[in-house]
Length: 284
Image (cartoon, rainbow, N blue to C red; front, top):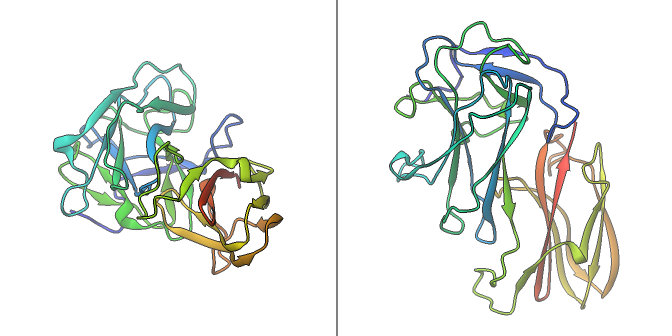
């Protein structure tokens, strides 16, 4: 069952964690009736990216998440539990914190839809923010988050509930967006490089970052911001450039002028023969 709202949950505001990947607006739990609750979020990293790590915000280290699940999607786009890989993460310290899990041993098909699930112990009740408050996952406020990309399963993957679009589950992924092989664009002369030709300052940033980039040869250039799902957020420049250095400003908004939520984004510089990707973090 896929509903447009998250049912039977507790939403509580919390303060910013100084060591956080990005600021958290609250924590949520599915309540006492849940058996092996799992919070799931999907991404489409793109053909030039490899999943290497998972991060999530764990409310209470004395009642930590038990597992992180990584899987592809089935024919309907839902989590493919038959081929899921689980990582134990129950040995956390008694703090409220972001937790990092190394998943670099996974072999996923390039560009496929990826679901990441965080499993918590059952029987949560009267959840409060912080240590001793109970097992819960963080969330942030977000503008029009796709409902189909965020699910909560109160029973370990049988029944699903969608998460309202203004909430984003505090689950993040780490990508190696510059593999050593060529990009899968049908153009064997185009390689992907890191930030030698592109740099964001400051990074992390709020409210804006300056993107300095260098064009090596005259030709068509595109500078574009993408979210973690591979969706285009905003095109900062598109057109011909002469060789030389340039600068663009991203103010953390999309192409319609809507302010984007805290999180990780990718800035891609495309020029003749090269693609350069810079990872940036927006902290509201």
